Amino acid sequence: MRKTLSSITLAVALASGHAFADQVTLAALQNAGLAMTEAQVAAVLAAEGEAAIAAVVGQLVAANPDAAGSIVAAAVKANPGMAVAIATAAATAAPTQATAISAAASANAAPGQAEAISAAVSNAVSQSGVVATNSGVSNNTSSVPNVSGGGGSSSGSTSGSPN
Image (tube, rainbow, N blue to C red; front, side, top):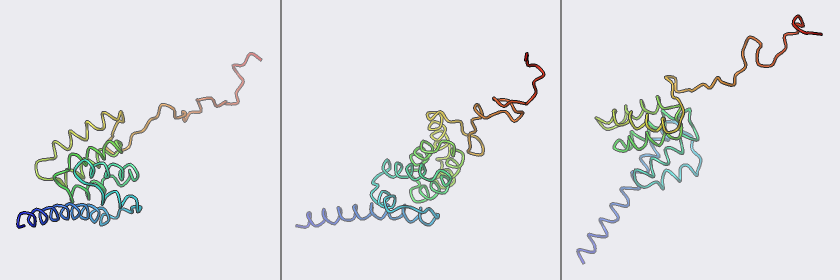
């Protein structure tokens, strides 16, 4: 009887501890000012384990790329041991925000994780094929028209016309 009671108590403690951890992540995200839909709140609360929490953070970053730094900072602050997984998922979801993601994760991670975070974010960005810049924005100028009037515009001059 005592063994059964101890097993049940342990199971309840483990289950409630995990639910508490998800509440901590949710509270951290909300305290960071992130507005979430009911579905996003439910996804955060349902996330169990490092992979699931990282995946949910990646989804939040994909939905709010401009807030990537804040989202990652809050999630890592709530789960400092998961910083590498969280940063990787976020960088995969928004590679142009890699600089902000790496900085936010490194600032809130457990001590000694900055190098691993930087390498993981760099790897995620390189796999995406997007070039991250210092500002976190990548500009593709290959299809931008030339300011000098090239690219199909006519100048109105007919001096070279055989007519």
